[in-house]
Length: 232
Image (cartoon, rainbow, N blue to C red; front, side, top):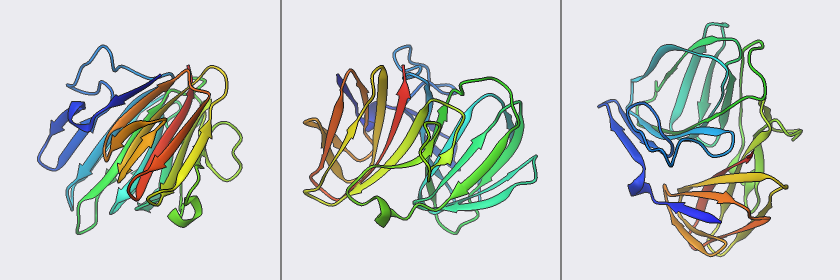
């Protein structure tokens, strides 16, 4: 089963400095059919105006992955971590027993991110943060694990039975991904156009995947995509 979730059907919030689209219920957006997908709880498509951002606020018991699509995000937290993550790269924050953080767009242009929240396998634990460059050329034509709790050696670690993957495809290219038993997937097309097992997606669309052993992603235009593999 693959359910296309068109960009136009997503929840929306406009705060002036933040233009947000929600694949799942979040803040004032409520949809009983879109509360979570396996262990995946949040997927926000955020556009953050230049010189603005999220003021310090707390989190606990959540794995928060930020995939930067355009611009850059600057992070600071109560552990003393500081870092800048730019387009194509990823940061991971394991909130653990509790952390306070801010995320600002200090760039002169709009920053666009995917903000992905995944439930951890266990509550509590020491919070942590990290980021890493993932050059798009290194994931051309294939899925590459960006963040993982499934033993992927080069990925940023998360404390969940899940992985976040990225791929870039040129028009006419195809990439396959095989799921294990009892797994679900959620795929979002960051740019371009592609088909997932024959289901056509445009930029911004999501695809909720269940009961598929393998997906075949074929690009009809140059495409960039992000996939979460999670247990049910």
